Length: 214
Image (tube, rainbow, N blue to C red):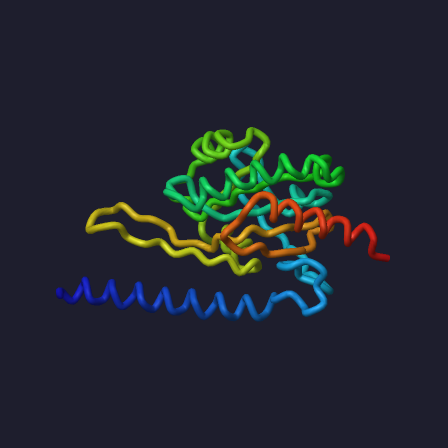
């Protein structure tokens, strides 16, 4: 094996180990308390989303203000994703339909895809991609430094993975769906695999729980 190939392999292994360690750390740091009323819910004292600025697919900045006053479902992926991303977005489309019976979400709910592949996912590409699933879905990305301002605080991991010896690549990324509340509370992390009926039920239960809480 050439020294350059060996160095690349070592680098990939180190990145994978680091990603795993960060994932374990984040899971421990944000794990739901034993008394959480819904599986995946960060309760009590859910952390709040801090400021960030992304480039929206509609040509406008997507910031924490875009999420304020809304029930937001955030998913991180990319348009060249072969399976997980389209499957998850299709599930989110069905979830939103099921949540039409939950008035708060029906009136103030939104889905946001954040691309972790800013090199290829232009605003035009993102707009066409999410529009295939639902024209109301939002999408955004940003250069790595601004993207990290969001992924870092949420514990979203993503790593570019070379495909073959050319310039083609894929992106390994966290496949969880996050629920952000109207006050920018990070209310829940729903781990993959996702099923629309279960996801809609959990979101409805969380909204009802918060409405019933003093």
